Length: 420
Image 1 (tube, rainbow, N blue to C red):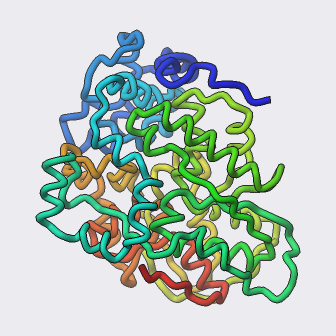
Image 2 (image 1 turned 30 degrees about the vertical axis):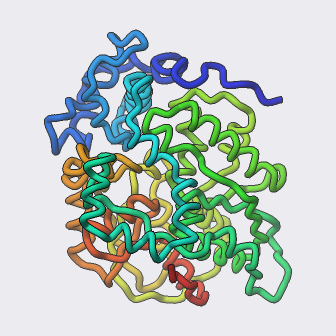
């Protein structure tokens, strides 16, 4: 039986999981040396100061508003040798800080499903409007969304609409059973081609792919401190995904949304619900899924692709401690050389880099990634998460693809339509 959230929303901030790790901090400053934000701006004092050090004095209240300059990339938690949940307690502190006076801008940019539904029917017009500089200047002045910030590219057909008419190309029955595909908001409305690639690869490998209609994971709301709305959305999503059947593996090409289900909803917001525990234990990133198949000897050989291509492993995937499965899988393709950026973050951090006051910081954080992508490329680069692809693409002019794009190609599958 599902139980309500034990400490709903802000009641969880500053307690239990993150705070339990507080006194393990040795002030070794490893987190400070690895923080991509602290290294480019003095506006952010660094994760040690604003995390465990400040948390000792918060008592459920915000101590220093500079914590809002944390991008929530999670690098500090990842590198901490003592297991202190630094990024998690900073996110909780942000939610407390914004309680009662949430900027309208932060509420609007968190409504990803609403944005997708509004833009899809008028995709060409919406895309054209987002390219009008004077209009972007007005939006910046009115809502605080930077005029040069990357915006999603609307598609004329959602992924779910495509899937309803889709018929697998194979001529034989699925032999490996069923899997559930979780597309995420961006994968449904903006990164439709990536979702198509993923489904066609899974079907080619012998799976029957189920796609129950579903909505948002709540990540954008969570990262902006809107814990109550995020909790509602993530539990609704769990219900939707569970409707496809018990015990089925859930595969996703949306790495950041996968992290919300596996880690952030519980560790940051304190969601304690058997539905989340169930879905979080069954969901897996698609490249991780393919690597597991290879390790079991169940992945077919790939056709050669003679390319050298730059790749950035996003912080959202690193935070899930899965390694870099995209590098492992792409390393199986003969002739393909993949060069990883070696950088902790591209700067966008979901909605962080959209905000007027944080845009310059986000660009400075991402510059080493941009430089890496531009140094040697075949006209495109690779990255696993959607907003990171938008950020890198906007700042470099390159076409950005999910690694599943090259897997799809190496399996000899026909290109899918990417028309808006």
